[in-house]
Length: 285
Image 1 (tube, rainbow, N blue to C red):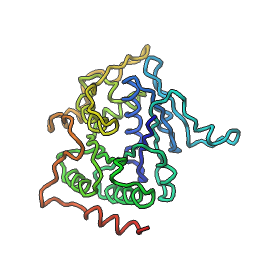
Image 2: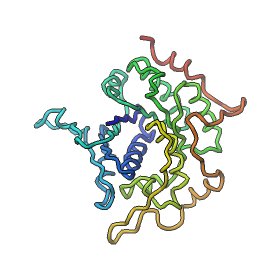
Image 3: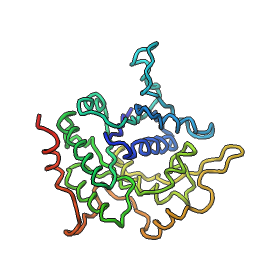
Image 4: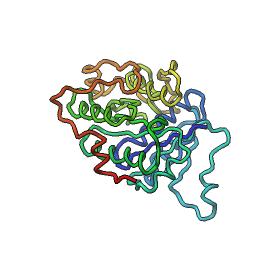
């Protein structure tokens, strides 16, 4: 059983979006993932409840709830047939909590948005994982996801250049797409949407899946989901104008190995090197 922790102390970085879409992908490929939701907002729990009986089941554990009638270990028990546990962590996680959160984690995903505040928070998070949680770079357990990016922006270029300085692999570059919003509304992931609508989004998950499994992913393609009675199938009709405009500006991204993105030119406005930020933000142990 593989334990995958999605972590970033800053709220709004897209942790739940990554967690539910990863669970959707694994379930649609015949695996038995379990979502463990530690976020008091309970977004992963609500998403899982929206899934229809015809869709692959995804059990969810409301880890944010406290039940005095049972022990904590009993509340967090995982089904015996589970193949993956995907942990959706809350915002404002303190450094001292990281050793417990990341204990027994096979992979740790850190989504980061293309903004100066998010870049700085990401640097602190990586520093805490290395210095407080004692996770070594050579273990290849930490992967960064550039999330909700628009490639034709200087901030995207600054983000990619910063991520290259971390010494941590960039395991996926995920565009800013309304498909994730539409899919979440129906309790599905982009991998379960109509292929002609979500292909560009699905292709961007190939490097992430390969990094998690250690093998090239040759089955990464959208799969349609049957609509519930009286309900329109998710994603029916033409894409919304926002996604269509972005698709016109950039071609579909083929599967690439991590860290394949090109750094920006020398005149791009970029933050300080990551090692300098980490050294300044996190005291040495």
